[in-house]
Amino acid sequence: MVRPPVSFDPVGALRLLLRIRLAERVLTQAWAEGRVPGEYHSGIGEEGIYVGLLAHLDEQDAVAVDHRSTGPLVARGVDLTALIVEVMGGQSGLNAGWAGHMHLMDPQRRVAADGIVGSSAPLAVGHAVAAQQLRPGAVAVALFGEGALNAGVVLEAVNLAVVWQLPVVFVCKDNRWSITTRTAAMTAGDPRARVAAMGVPVVTVRGDRVDRVHRAAGRLVQRARAGKGPGMVYATCHRPGGHFEGDPLLRILRDPRGQAGELAPGLLAGVRAPTGGSGRQRVEGLSTLSGRLAAAARDWGVRTGRDPIRQARRLVPEDAAEQVRADEQAHVARAAAEAARALGGLRVVSGVAGR
Image (cartoon, rainbow, N blue to C red; front, top):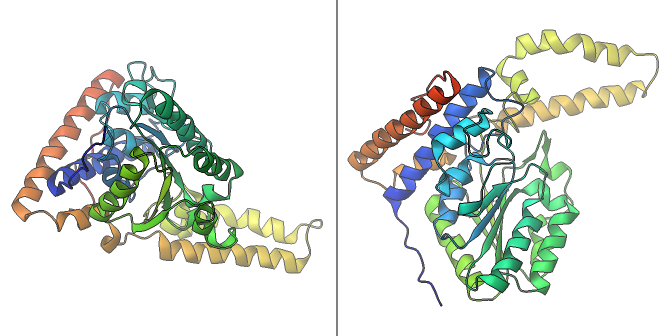
């Protein structure tokens, strides 16, 4: 049965963008207070990709997520209180406190995250095989970063999806960084060309423009539903934070004086060490570090022009946008308060970037 395309709803999109951003703010603040076990990988800046894409999916479709899992799960409709409690290790959380934030899952909504880079691609292919056999017309989606396109498992998954003409849409989120290395410095050629060479249609879109993501993703989802095989949305985006909360490059940028005092002894000891690389190699190493810091300073600052929420607000009348903002602040505050009661205290963050 052919499903009609989903129309873009600017008010609904803004609502979900704000909900995701506020949930991320609650959890990044909790991490800063030491209440989140392990690392936390924020998806702030990627919200437009999640919202524009997932609007086209229904309960029969499946979503395989990478380590930036909060936004996609919120967009998929997962209970926000249960998600917050889970990320903070509470037994009443979404997965009884076992998943952390990189392995969140909700089987009823067919959405799951995996912390292994690139693993979402083969997982989505598995979902697509099941859909092809058991749920004709259903699709699967894989979310990953551009650095994952250097992983063999991703290209193997794309290859199999083409050979078997599977109903899967691969979604690459390109912020130009692979952890703390500029992707261009570790990638030969244009990674989109690798996928296109297999016969996969690749649509490049600005990820901060939720309306454009919605349009591009809709075409590929409809194509996959019709049995015409896989496609890829290649969404460029700007993430104002680092790879994870507490990212070492970000710490240096935010507190250069303090970090210099902490790092200088080790760096000087390395330069003066009697064994190891040549003097030239050591100087080149310091130069590489300086270059990365300079690039991070250019790329990781808050660029209001590339913020998905600011872009989406332009599509909604001001009074309606303000009402949506107030509603979502109240909604997330209630969820955070419920999580606080379950966990024994949590400071609620009420502000939201992109207002």
